[in-house]
Length: 369
Image 1 (tube, one colour):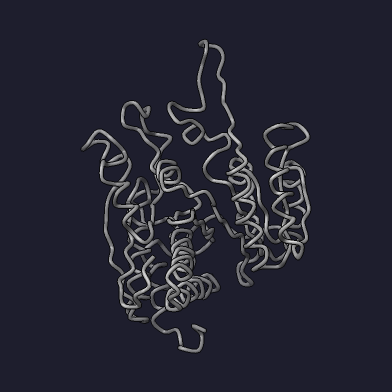
Image 2: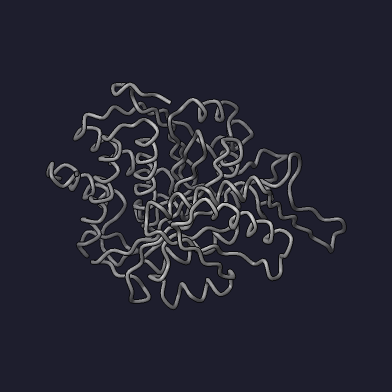
């Protein structure tokens, strides 16, 4: 961990597929504005993942990518169209899963926050965070040392294997309890141990064991199907939620859409030593090249990365940068005429980003505190 206040913040920026070039460009414009306001040096390394390197090098993940990611202070990953990739044996590696696995980014942290001027879809304010286990579960590219967790013993039978470990369950529970302590002091454990008695049973047992070290945190346990219904009924009843990989993926998309729009949803993949900002949504190839994509998700995710780095480096400027970005996004979406099309506004990607840059440039010193 670097402690030199003058050391540049090294960021690996990975351009992916679909709308990725447009929202990456918008995010870098925002970082440039923050850098100018705070005299905060960023050392950016650019690289491509996905379909472009597949066509050039025969793989979606270039050979030096992992070394570059490990050497950087943080990673910003644009959306990828991994559903369109060929089999992994033909170079079609999912860059997102690859980096989550090899950088051990075990926690996927996804806030769902409504804005006063862009209200939640179910009529009540939402301010919660879902802490999702990120390296095991039903995800086929993260469950096996070799091969995948899916296979077909015959042409008519497909089998998917789910991996839940004591180590994985314990460390995601510990991460969630720490976040709950920083927030409202309440944690909801979401599971399906009534049916998946062994695998979710292990996850639930681990969260109960970790809870013993956090007597100040109020803990409740809810079945995942009930949780999906309760979020729709009143998402404001929840603060911090912890769950396994696939359940967390589904519930976080639901929660952020309830909060207003998945296009605003921040997402951080974090481990003990590395972190990666990544938009919560996909690559939206039907919008590619049309200047119609909302870049706010990746911009807000980058703010989360800067806050994580601020804690690592003990650099208050990075915390200030994160607040500045989040405040600027909130300022812009408060004005209907400044929103992108998915939020009912008239602006395209670049014009929306320009409004955020302008908001950063006009932020007063007192507003950064």
